Amino acid sequence: MKKIKLGTKKWFGMTSLAAVLVLGACSGGGGSSSSASGSDASLGDQVAHKITGIDPGAGIMNATQKAIDDYGLSDWTLLESSSAAMTASLDKAIKKKEPIIVTGWTPHWMFAKYDLKYLEDPKKSYGEAEEIHTIARLGLKEDKPEAYQFLDNFQWTEDEMGEIMVAIQEGTAPEKAAADFAEAHPDRIAEWTDGIAPVSGDTITLALVNWDSEVASTNLAKYVLHEKLGYTVKELQVDAGPMWLGVAQGDADATLAAWLPLTHADYWAKYQDKVEDLGANMTGVKTGLVVPAYVEATSIEDLVDGK
Image 1 (tube, one colour):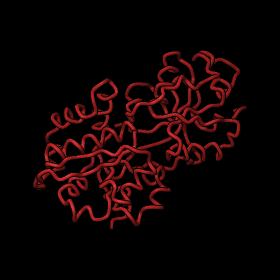
Image 2 (tube, helix red, strand yellow; image 1 turned 180 degrees about the horizontal axis):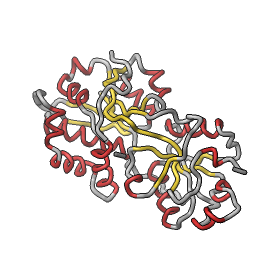
Image 3 (cartoon, helix red, strand yellow; image 1 turned 180 degrees about the vertical axis):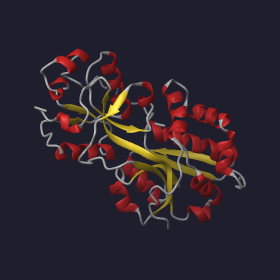
Image 4 (cartoon, one colour; image 1 turned 90 degrees about the horizontal axis):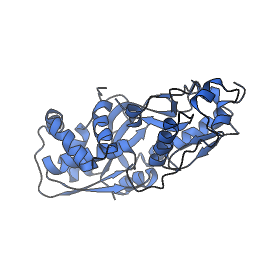
């Protein structure tokens, strides 16, 4: 069984689609951009000491709670919502030029659409740059060697993923966005499938969390496995915990959505002896607190009232 091999797979270079309850902007005390730059009110007062988060239990939510503790932000509240609700709140705030603080990560289409910045994290609450790994159930190599080889070969870049994410965000169905990417980049598909003989109708199940990045990667893998390698592909869309458990138990064959070493650290510690790590399918990814570029704050330390 392979262990985590951080940084061992090459990458080349940019940045959850279920029905959700779209929340209103969570910046309850938000002012205008002029108030952000000229008012005596602290940034905390302007956003009612609220950070707009995503799904409860997500690794980035745990890291954000750690940041709240590390920086002494005891008067701040981390709001639980979803990826879609978070970006809806961000969009609403930006249209009004209001300050807002959200939990963010790259790759994500919002960095292509909006002028955003990460708040510096001198205490390293969010750790260093992460990687997205492909994790397989034990025995997949023996049971489905063709699928295993493709998943082991698969690696891509933020720019490439961004093509699919932006297309989906603009209204293209995920399956169509993945197919369009494959047709536009035949050399990449050939690289991932080189020397792999197609099968005839075998079934494979891919688990994923409902993040834009994972929807993009899973739909592209689904396209290649089905159209080029002959598999019937099922998707198992769940939260992060059930995703890892599903692969560990064999309910899913693999996932391309394991964020390591920080975001899914607890799941890796729990299941590392029950899964196989195929290495990074993308490197240099990042998580942290994100604000619009017009917000004057540059560091999480700036969220402490009086600074």
